[in-house]
Length: 624
Image 1 (spheres, helix red, strand yellow):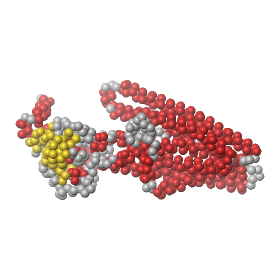
Image 2 (cartoon, one colour):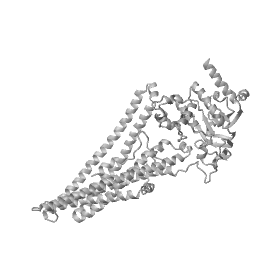
Image 3 (cartoon, rainbow, N blue to C red):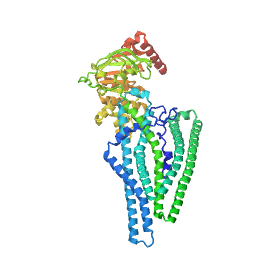
Image 4 (cartoon, helix red, strand yellow):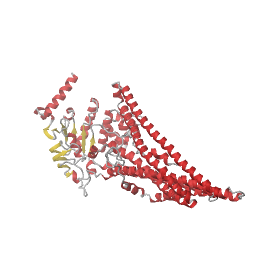
């Protein structure tokens, strides 16, 4: 009887260390925690079926194997009846006995081969469909604007990509196959039972609901407890990741005992929930064993009376008992399948939500081509902008700025003045709510975003590296770059020295987020990556903030040489790095409040002069 063994495995899985998807999401299948009744629609599974039938040959093969395995399973009881009635009869011919047993072995061989083929085919389909859905979702996510991820947690999206696709893999690779197989065996088994013994079959059909009822009752309770148990396990994972990630802080504050006690509490809560799950499972197992074997005993009792009276044969009784077990197990499994399908529908709906999200930034139907060769002129004309997550606060207000080709413009001002917003708009991560932004005279909204970004190289405030080799990180913006070009860019960014010293040179794996490098080294690789891209526009967002004084001077010299032929926008809080800029733009409250050279602004007595006085006085004091 396989039904009871699967009940505690049907709860919705979650990625380790990750909280379950929020209950108030539109696609939540179970509805727990929302105060609403569970959504029972299976319509979201249509997306899964469409992916499934992209492989009609494999579906046909799996279906054929499934039907063959189900029919072979039902043929075994018939073989038992023939073997017992014919092979065990007194005076039976040895040749006849051999033939009957060979026939039964042939059925077993067919069952084994078809079951193996069915398992491989449906498992292949499950993994393939999940892989295709993950690829579709990932490709779609990469096309969405950054604003979407401000309003939707990347961790929750990651949960959809892991936990929800795992549920779909279970539905395609297991649930559907189990449902179809058991439906065939239940239907065919009942027909065969009526052919064997109509009277006993009528009694069996009365007994089957008595077995299914406790499975349904206990199963619902068990699934709820299993979900709670997995949530507790997820809490342990999240707590472990949190504490280990902040281990230095924990040890610095001598909070090891406190964290150990907190972790112990979480483990004990998990154990208490597990005990409840085990208790329910134990009671259910006992009840089912009594009902199942009690029903079989009563049926065999009645069958024995029939054999004694000569109304049925011993082989018929044997076939009846085996078939009855198959039918009862099939009906028991079918009670679980619908719940699994509902959970699969919930998972599919959450993934479908991501796929249905329209990119806020997209190319127009007929994008306007940017001029060739590129000039590198950037113009902000009466631009106003508010971030979607902060609609009450204006990041830019009626902003005007034109940067000529080859000009270096420094953007300075207090935090929140709107400096980084300029970069986000220039790369068209957002569209302004008012005004227009142009590159080489073409409005960004009229151009293809990929064409716009192909003309810009960005060095962010913190060097973002990928879990890959140094070579792959350096040529991220120019995949076809050869080693000579890579080393030239590394030399210009003062990164050649430490790159040469890496154990495997450019092939050295840098770890997650470049964990094997210091902050300054990561930043120099980010600078080299931008230089290697060789674009007409360079955006430097505090590009030298993570460097020590000596490295900063070397990199600054390299950048000044390279900026001579590029349009460069530099965001800087340390004003000493922008003294040589062609123009300094001072921002405050989303507006330009001052503009000019360092010397003129320092003498003007405005905001720039106050910022410069504070910074240079502090530096003089620190060296005094």
